[in-house]
Image (cartoon, rainbow, N blue to C red; front, side):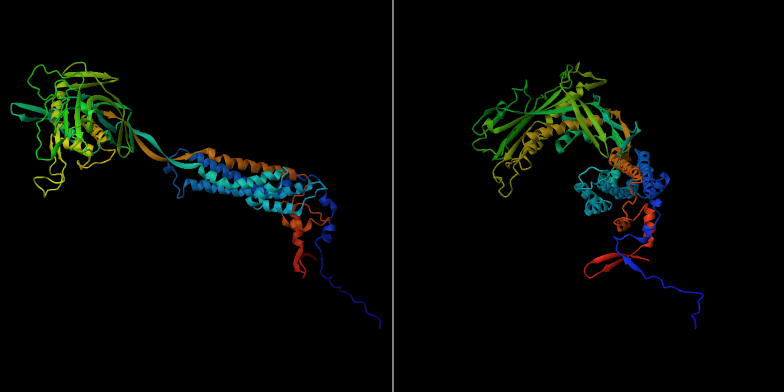
Length: 604
């Protein structure tokens, strides 16, 4: 029977076979060549291939503009104007990070694309190594690979710009964030609520005077304010012009330099031979006749106990024999109150050196009227410093007298000056006898110190300033001796000046009140590096787009898929999207052949 003709005939499907990657792809080989004709690409189609890079560049541009706009808006603004829960610097850092990350997308694509024109530019006799391709691939991944590319690729190329920008881009956010800080600023708040006192006159006040009947027939008038100031200056360790408190209703108050009438001090070290005028076998005699005409009388003194030697002596230049009823009381034209002091150092041998003037110390301290120029600032506390002192003031007449200094007129009352002189003379006239042996000879059970005796109100204070609290112990302390005497005179002058500045007759000096606030401080020069990196990245992107616009250069960027096909001479790869379409049809298998690993393409 003849074979019957079948209406349908089935043929078997050809088996799947594999071809090595270096053999031509049948699919690609059959593609029409006019699709891959080398010609200049259409501009819109070309830009479409760079759409993601252009989009990220636009994002970085928007972030840069926003960052600069925010900084410009909040520049020199109080921090209270920023009401967000996060800091302004955080917002700047976030915008800078967005700009940095967006720029790195386009830079990576540009570096990947620029390897193709670089490979094409190689001379036939000096082809590139495959290691060069790997270097480009590493450079697209970050700063480390870009640094290696800069070090290994010597010939200048546009890709160097991309690699350099990638490395420096590490500092982008840091520099941007550093552009904004906070600072304290003072704004004028008021010009009437900052007040501090100064003195324009030295005159008695009715409410601050009292009479002391030192002698029944000769009562003496004393200014209670000056009396208390003198006591304060002698018992306080430190008195400064800052002790006069200012009135300040703001965060900060300042005053222009202002003048006040006060007392200034000075101290000099004398030769003890000029004060110790006579010595005996076991005694010395003191006198200031070399310095003062009509030497004032000294308070009577005699050692109280055996072994207590007269170790200190002090007096003033003022004669206390003054008759307040005398009609011709004529104060000096230039007031000055001097204190003379001599003491025997406990470091010396009292048995062999006591009667030797060269082993004694002698000082002179002075107080005088002066005009001080002060500078005051109140910032939670009052700080006043003396800028200038004008001394040796010559008053025009006795009794009441005034002098003009700049725009200010200063006056003094001669009668009050005379009364103060009398109190000064009484307070700074005295002696001290110090027991040098270990125990009191009359009271052996009583320890050392019970035999120290003083006359005068402040003689013990000066002894402590010069010798320390233990006046019979030898000490090597730079704060004692002349330094202590000078410091005490300065304290006394400051206390008296402060009292004049706080009396009822004080003249108020008005300053300026400031309100201190925190402001945003923006320094745009910190943005120099971020802006420079942005400009360089933009130049790199658009130059790469222009260079890759030539049809002779494939637009493959850094795709690894291209490397699977590029070894095929007949690949016919075009745009990157065509490469992706081809990759969708290709299959690969990673095979262990037993001798090596092999990536094979499977073609259906």
